[in-house]
Image 1 (cartoon, helix red, strand yellow):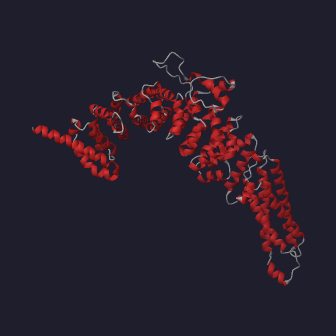
Image 2 (cartoon, rainbow, N blue to C red; image 1 turned 90 degrees about the vertical axis):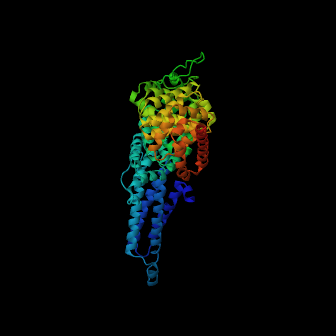
Image 3 (cartoon, rainbow, N blue to C red; image 1 turned 180 degrees about the vertical axis):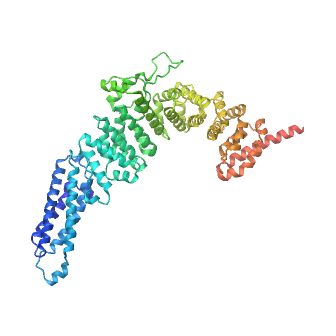
Length: 600
């Protein structure tokens, strides 16, 4: 550890000193003079290259010097020079029999050390070549990497990205992205060899969209596991990514938003860090470009927030670098100095570029919202719900699905947070109503499972927000119990279970609505086809508790079904033992009472 803390100049001072000692000891040799002179010649050449390396490192700014290969090669050179010094010191005295026995030097020893010195010279020569800013990436292999050529390429590419001219940096980043693609060992090597800081530095290169795309692509290829994502986040990557997302051209923002999605999906720390840096706001703004929000019919007589004001908001955020504390897309702005050229460039972007950016931003919001109260609050504090509702209504394909998944994750977080449910998803609020209406429309009109399932899940998560009188919600979900896709039907059953669950204040009224809309026959039919059966049996238990006197349950022989399934289910889910016992007891009371009534 102490060795790593030394400066590069300190690291290089030892092999230079050793080279000088080898030369001096070789000159003093009394035996094997020819061989020692050969080693001295190699040491002299090596010393010159090492001193050139010192001059190079001294002239380079510390923040732009890539030192990983220097330290690694210097360490190997030092070992070789120590071996050479030990050998030539054995030759400083005139040979006699005793000294010859003790020294035991041979031509083979000199040949081996000579080869090692030649390799060291080649290593240092190669090292100097990769630090030439005008040369570009070097694909030749130094002896130190003869058994692992990828290491040499990684060093060369990273050095070029760190210290080369702009075009060479772009070329090197693209080459590194290819190395990192679908090869875990290469990815690990790039991170271990400290490739992330220069890539983030290149990502900040605002003068070149091509450079930013190359850097973002490489980082995306690297960020496929939690450890590497954390490495990016720990190198100030989150702050840099947020800034680039705010200020770059759209084609760059697409790649950056994809990077955000992957990082947020794989690492909870990165996910929360993005939230703390308020990345949700630019994402919502990019998602909502060209989206016109409807004027609420019951809105007070004031200017309603809309996404027509995106340009002004972009001005404000460009000025503040998205570091302000405002979280609402309220259309207000105190002006700014946003470049007119950038505004014009954004307006002139092709529709397909805008569409890709929206898809990427929706994906990023989905991954950021998943399981995160912080991010869910920040998203819903903007006009995101209105924007998501409008896109779900008007768009098709991947964008619509990503927006549905975002709403689903927001609703899942709200399920366990009463304040978020009340503030964001209140059915009488414009945003809450817009989202719920679109979810119900998707459930009622769409047939594809990837669309219907997230809509059903979202409604289920919001079950506690709906009043007892709003039976249309239950009606829509009950209708999906008979869906031809079993996955859809099971999700409908799970959602209805959240309506009928005793934790729901309106569970009795919701249970009655389920029975009223012929939910029991559909539920029994689903029980015949779904092998898992636990969600269906749970819902049946809830109905037994709340509407146990229902003729529909009696006709469906709910009691015998629960009795027959109880042992098997409770063995898998001991936590359901009490629920089954109560449901069976409740149905037994009603059915016994009904039997006695018929006898009378």
